[in-house]
Image (cartoon, rainbow, N blue to C red; front, side, top):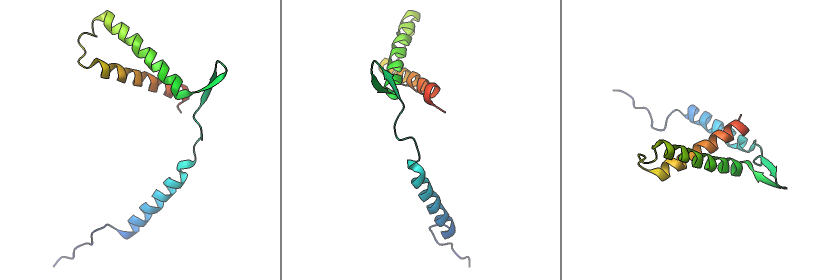
Length: 100
């Protein structure tokens, strides 16, 4: 007759996973405490706000290009497409300017 393995996995593996999880959780605060800020017009603006603004302006510019090329009439969900374009442009700017 075959012996069945107890459910729940290997106890040594579970212990190691617990220690790895504890180490990852405790090192979670080892990051820069504040987001990068840029001084503009005498005030400090967070970088995400600037990247979002650049993304929205870029999406408006791409919409102008799409209208001129006739692609805008064919798009099925325009709001979703332009929102995703704005997010993509903002993420690209954030990664190139502040990413590692």
